[in-house]
Image (cartoon, rainbow, N blue to C red; front, side):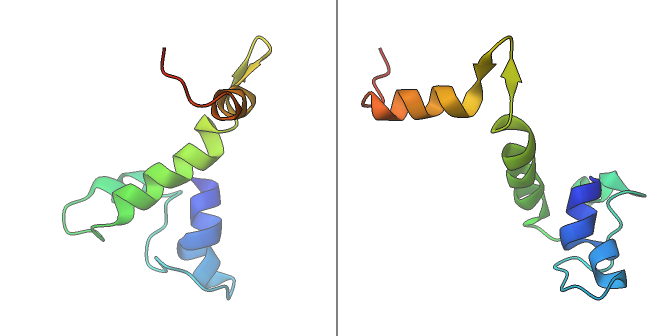
Length: 80
C-alpha cells in the first residue's frame, strides 16, 4: 500500500502534495480500507488501484494479461 499512501494518503499530505485521504496512513494501517466509518468509496479506490498495479501488470510463463486482453479485444471479444 506504499504507492497508495504516496499518491493519495498521509505521505502525500505530509510531503505537500494534494491528497484525497490526508489522514489515512495506508502503510501503518492497511486495514483502514475496511474499517467501519471510513470513506465509503475507499474500498472501490483501493480495488481499482490493485487492478491497475497487480492485475493489468500480471504475467507468468510468457503469458501477459494486458497482451492477452488486447488480443481478445482486437479479435472481437468473442466469449466462445
